[in-house]
Image (cartoon, rainbow, N blue to C red):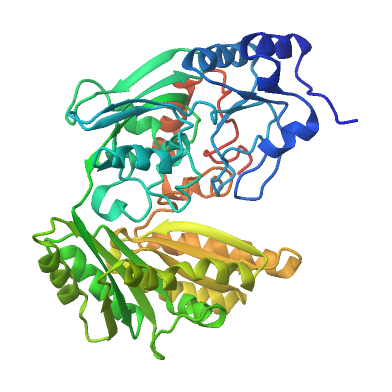
Length: 467
């Protein structure tokens, strides 16, 4: 028989009275599926609850606050850092049933949604009115707005349009003390009080449970152009990135893959690339139909460096799809090469990308680990993939040592350890390398103010007590 929940019977009864029996999972076999995320870490919560309203969230937080029960808010579990893994048991609060779009105000360009709404659903609803929400993570067809806000997940469009922090006007949330708060505004300007909206975004559910978000909408562009530039080496590609970002026309996507990624694509797809290809950029620009040709020409000019091997511009939907096939071929290639992928999303200043890639190549040789790099070149956000075999103890040991050096290299280059994946469990042991003790202490004090009993996503983000 599956093990029942270890929560006190009185607490389970209160949960069922509040939500109904079918909205509370207590059997071990039922709870198991809500104990993991895309980091492949696993822990079993004591219970899983499905909420449908702010009022229900408020009562559950108050109950957990009173009984000192850990509470972990969860969307669809697409995160890669273990931030929703219930390592201390407690209750996983699933927001997947809080999936309503509450209001679309096109005149004032905002949309009010619940946290369980899928990113793609937001885009589809906005598009009917000629708008879009800027954040577009790679998992947009499955990830939730709540998860996007928890990690400040952005995607390729951030290079032009910014992250969730720049595209969220306000929030409704419940603090760890069981108090309702409203942050932000309904206008594009507002400077009354501290900016708690930006504080909650990216806090990984450690300060409050978001129950409603007011999203800033932007008009859909009339036209777009997709381009692909192939270079002999990383230096030429980075020179092009710097030139592109230094001129007035800002691309809506500027994606990068390195030599190792190109070679991997060659081995696992029929995509054709120049023989001497050492790096590739995918460039997209959007805007007015009257200026799109001019804008595309400006980007092509900026992308033309001495190391340019090939430049292609797509003129129709089929050609756009063909150009993106090169980039899309990378993910299945990565899955075929190694049974486990350690995926980090570091960021360095654009001019330091060559030094980062060269340093990573050196580390790959030193530790005997294949490292594949790609990402959002326009803002220096590079996804560093260490391909390892989890059944090889020596390789896993080397991977840990290598990762330590990867982070040291990033910080040496004035970078940051995460651009959009967050900290969770995967990076918490390294956070005090980037954040000084005084600032870290201030962050922990803020956590105490929002969550005095430490119930919200405990054991995440901050360095472990024994570190």
